[in-house]
Length: 235
Length: 119
Image (cartoon, rainbow over all chains, first blue to last red):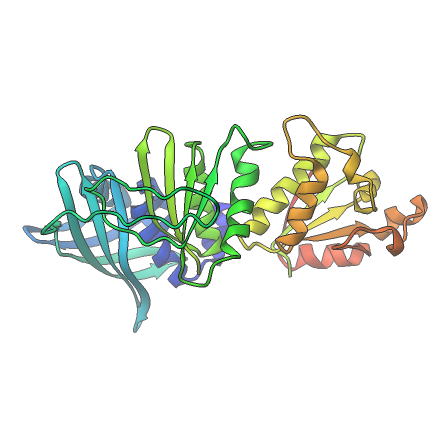
């Protein structure tokens, strides 16, 4: 199935997949996005990395982002720049010590639906001046409003879906994404749905669903073990 | 052209297979992947009024709920004409969202690139 996906995805979808790989902390996915022998030049504030394969690139990306508990999309842009694919993103990252903002700009060449050369410019993790308190969510599905940790960036949410695995008749994988699809039908393009799920397996489901459907996963939070929150922007 | 063609050959004789075909179809459709559930052999009974309402495999949603969700999400239900005819099933017997098709229609989907699964 992944082979099929790789053969039919557009260059723009591949760019979105890169961003989702970081936001979902699904770092191993980079091996599906890049050629095994991908050549990378990474310009970060203190040095330049020249890497010759995807394993080294994976280690570098993990080293940058793995320690952050929560990564949120602040802005993205994916578009062709001449013959190159441009992937631009600004992310809000939080850890117990505070919030940071990072922006990365990538230009890449593709062969057979995968990145085989990549140039990346990185701002480095820039500390935010002050923590941002999360706004109340709008519980249009009868859900209650809530406040997240004050160390987490704000996300404006237009609708809420709560999914309790035990209360559902059947497994999460069978029901969750159809419920999401139905709920998204109530939203306009660009609006954000928060999905709360008490089943850790939902992460794999929703990451796949996002790649297939083209709806953007803005952030994934795990405030308590097994209690996941997904923020999905309707395409 | 559909991206997925899911073949189901069972009805009341195997509630799990009958239900799972539509669960997979519904998940695919929820991700905007155009999906057809192709009913053949005794599976064609699933396309008839009132039949699926009798099928509820323990641990699964009732089949009629899954089928309704599948159709609401844009999924298509095709019943094999070669299989409906000897069973006396006509278009007048079918549930909303279902239709009787020929073998050529299914082959056209497969040749056009639809991936297939069987239950």
